[in-house]
Image 1 (tube, rainbow, N blue to C red):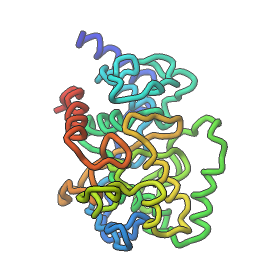
Image 2 (cartoon, rainbow, N blue to C red):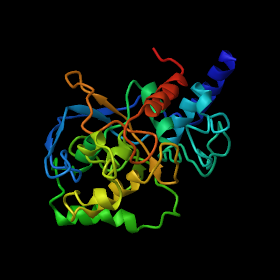
Image 3 (tube, rainbow, N blue to C red):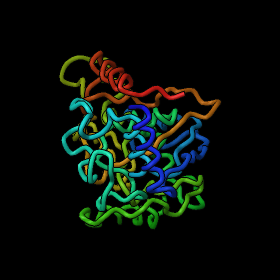
Image 4 (cartoon, helix red, strand yellow):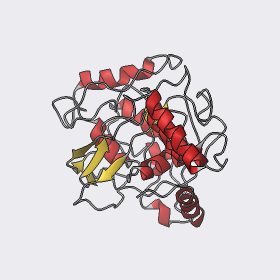
Length: 295
């Protein structure tokens, strides 16, 4: 069985030699960042530790190599608690891409659990929202271009394009940090996707104010003119960890050697708006247990 899986993996690599290679991670310095999601639920900036971010989204070819090496993440074997019925449904087969999923296109229709599992196979994790938002604020010459109306218009233009068109391949222009395709290609999972509209002080309370999401949570959002980023917050906050969509992909992040793995926002939980719980920790443990150990 192990020899057969190795032969399958080698065949997949041979079919797309230019698409599967060692992932490139680019360093970002971190620092104080004025997020659309204030750190204190009011107006405080976030403190982001230095981190490294994958320079490009994960592709179909890379994810195919992953599911061949980790067959529990094939669409015909994945546990229903880790992915919905649309998971990788555009692939020609559980172990083949086909015309609807080209090797250099970003992989989509992957759940949060599957994305996190892939990142763990690269000794990484999904980026946290503040990390992703900080990286996505850059353009080719500025670490934070959000104050430029022309930049905001270019980012927002993507949202008006028909979603029925085939996704382009990765490899857009690099930003100041050497990162590509953060804006204008696909939505992307973040680790703490469903903690974005939960007030930092409300998680320790009981009663009707315990969960602040949707309209109530949106009241505290900043930079209302940065509409595209606010749309991402709204979309991510509406998801569950098992959800998959045709325009939702991911990339991975790592802490730099000097950067601790501490979260700026609460850890992601299985259900939208829910506080971390025993069930959440059990789900993450179960997801990790489904991994094949990597050296």
